[in-house]
Image (cartoon, rainbow, N blue to C red; front, side, top):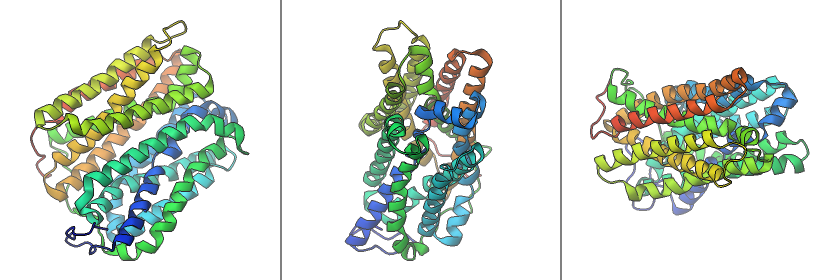
Length: 408
């Protein structure tokens, strides 16, 4: 709902009361808390998950990549669903699917685990696409503020889920299953707030549904690769960093999980600082490349970290990768918007960047797990992360060009 005094969006709902706007804002923020936490808690307990469900390294990598495959598959279908049902009812449906996926992961066995994870991925993909639409149409006067708030909350909740996964699995009945399921509670609270608002939100349709993806544009592919390679680096480390640190650096399970929290906390700080560092297109492009190079430097330090390495080396590497990744995410999203030609072009370019980008990112954890299984070492997986960060730096340089993508 738009803030008082904000113009209404053509074709969308009229501005709402201050009370209704506050309820919707709370619903948006609670939804953001559920958009990463159900996934980020998996890495620290992946060994326990694998042991309970008899998963090898490659299968465990596939489990962590499954949400990304769901993101890629579902992102392109969301505008059509939102056009038929309305934006807010579609968000409510996504939250119900998320709750169903979280419940399914509590059922013993590998099949319910994979099925529930796939449902979570579909639900989060819907939220990824539609929350910006809600913010643009219902908070038109405060788009940057509300967007920053929900992105920061998403990252904070994800970091908390990583750090708390091992302690919660030791304290809650049901072990790791309960430790993962608890992060669906924000989705339940959000669904209860969204539901009464859904009827009023049926008039909000996803804009630009008729735009064609710009498949022939080199600039669009640069934007897509920038998004995809940034996601590949993040999700490789999200999946395997705790296991890697336990095996290479001798950290305990809880401390390794908190390193994943440090990774995401560094990303939060970087994402808050980035707006102050960018301005002109040239400066933005330099910052994008610098973020990718920070990830590359952190990956190189992780490659060097092994038993006997200086104690501060691992946290420094984690801060570099996390900070670079947080900055890169904000800049990749900004580049997707800035390079687009109007609202319809933004939807088309975002759909291409998310579908192809997440498909690329999904290969990362699987390939990293397969490399570890084949070699018995994490060094090849870290080389993969470093290579992705280097490729991201090249893509970011082109994606930051002061141009717009021609419509397909």
